[in-house]
Structures are given as C-alpha cells and as structure tokens.
Amino acid sequence: MRQDPAMRAFIIHLGIFVLVVGVLVAINLYRSPDHIWFIWVLAGWGIGVAAHDLALLLQRTGRRSTIIPSCCKAAGSCSRMPESTTSWRRRVWPTVSAFTAYSGRT
Image (cartoon, rainbow, N blue to C red):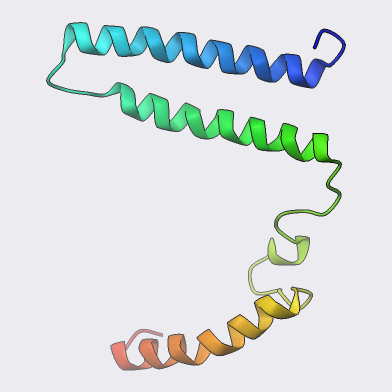
C-alpha cells in the first residue's frame, strides 16, 4: 500500500470519512437527539467516497471503455449508442410522445 498512491489516497479518504462522520453522529445525538441531521452529511460524503472507490476499481480492473459514452454527454446526440439502447429508445419514444401529446405538454 505504501507504493500505491491511489490506494493510499482512498484509504485516507475513507478513514477521514469514518472519523468525521463518527464525531458528527456523537455531536448530533448528544446535542439534539430529536433532530437527526448527520444523515445528510453521511449520504452526501458517502456518495463522494463511493465515487472515489468506483474510480479506483475501474483503474484497478484496467477498464478502458467509458461508463457514459462521449456521444451522450451532449444532449440529443446519441447516434453512436449501442444497438440495445437505441432499440429501447425506439420502443419507448412513441409512448412518451403519446403521453406528452395527451397531457398537453410539448
């Protein structure tokens, strides 16, 4: 672990997360046990730790493909999406169009 800076950074991030959230839980339950607010810190920072872990996992597995294709980052330009995704889009789009026409939305 000492030679691997990416893993070391994640372990430090996880350790600080556990330590700070533990202190915030203690403060919250001691000062105002009827109003639980530490959950928001836990959820928000937990998403960040999970993203850090996912990035490390993808780096470790050597995955070269992206999770979200670059063609989909710009709205409305999904022409190079996999066939399974485009066929799903073709099946669902008439339903969405009919709903928006029925509801009066454009």
